[in-house]
Structure formats: structure tokens, C-alpha cells
Length: 317
Image (tube, rainbow, N blue to C red; front, top):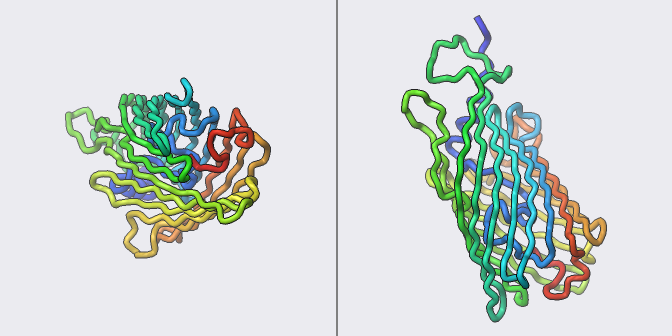
């Protein structure tokens, strides 16, 4: 009889079923296009960003994600365009998603208000032939024995306001509006669908000194049937070069301590290149079974922040 190795993966499936379906990122402030299509083109320089995240290090089948995004303003900053390619994996499930975002930007007296639309195509795949899972027998017709995949088209919308002179921003979005089925049942039974996620974000920049910029910002996430998630970050930029930040995340755990405490360090390595690394210290009961989470971000400004004069170079927008 074949051994059963499905328990750790089944636990992860249970966590996923009761939690938010979309990938979390500690460095959300550099990855806003993943949360809100209205943010496309919100920085006046064309920008290319790559993020790698390894969650719950040491736990087999734990989530990991990679995302590459590009955004730029067009037509005198009246239009913003953006595109994202992302890969997310948890246990035997892999999502590869292509997103295209368009934002119409309306110049107001003290800032810019943008309305964004997003078109998306996702390949949803489950590898039931993975060697890590073993079934006692293969007689249950509800459990596939071969890899399954399907394509999930979707669209989303969001609004985003950036007050460049007063140094604050706010946004609200639902990136995926269609509740696609993510079941592979051959008998007409449907248990799982994509869930609509509502994302709200905001932040403000202060300059207590000419060489110091402090930016507190928050991200709120809600999905129907899942616990409310919130992240509060405070970052400090010294001499427009060295960045340090701290994030506190709360979510679905009931221990009262929150989900994680995250430390972030970054550097403006060259005029065009920004690098950032973060480490999440878990606060949930799951912390006994993993060594935290790590995330790396690389951002390339095609127009260096130092030569941009229309807004402050250190704004997080």
C-alpha cells in the first residue's frame, strides 16, 4: 500500500480556502499595480519592478511568488499604462497571471485623480501527479490523478488619488471582478470560485529634515468570507539613498498578536536602480513550523528620480 504524504499539503489547502486567495507582498508600496490598476502611470518616470517572495521558509509547499511589472505615463501624464506578469505557487497549485492596466488621469487643483481598468488572463494549474502527495488508493473519482489546468479571464477597476503638493495618496480597487470557477470536477459539482478582493491603500510623506523623509502608509484587504487583513508601514529615507522600514500585519489568526512584524532595508544603488529586502517575523501559531518570510525588490527608473522636477523625487506614489 502506498504511503500517505498529503497531510501538510492538505493543511495548506485549508488555510488557502479560508483566507484571501491573492498573494500578499510586504513591499506593497513598490508593487501597487498588483493591487490597484488606477496607480498605473502615477510616477512620472517609466518604471520596471521585479519582486520575489518566499513565504514561510522551511515549510514544504509554502507559498512563493514572483512578479514583474512595468508602468509609465503617456500623453502629458493624462494616461497611465501598466502591465504585470506574476507567478504564484502554493503546494500543488500554480497561478500564472498576465494583467494589463489603463488609467485615465484627471489633473485637479492639488493632485491627480485616476480611474483605472484592468484586463487579466490567469492560468490556474493543479499538479495532482506531484510526487509529494500519495493516495491510499486511486479509486476516488473526485480526486484527479493527472495535472489539471484552466484559463481564467477577468477584469478589474480601481481609483487612485495622489496629492503631489500635500504629499499624500489614497486608492481603492477590486482587481478581479469575475468569480470564476476554480474546480476541476467532472460531475458538475462546484465547490470553489475566485473571490472578489477589495483593496484600499493610503499614505503620507513628511520631511522633518532636508535629509530625512518619513512615509507612513497602510494597506487594507478584504475578501468575502475571509478575515480582514491590514498592513501598516512606516519607512524612513535618509539622504535620498538609504531606506529603512517597519510593517505590522494583522489577518486571520486568532492569537491576538497579529500576523507578522516585517523589517525592510533598501538602497538607491545608482541614479536609476533601487534595491530593497524585507524579512517577515511571524507572530501566528504557524511560526513554530517555519523560519519567517523573505522578499526582494528591484526597481529601475528609466528617468532617474534626481532629474524629475514636476514632483518630489522621494514620493511613494
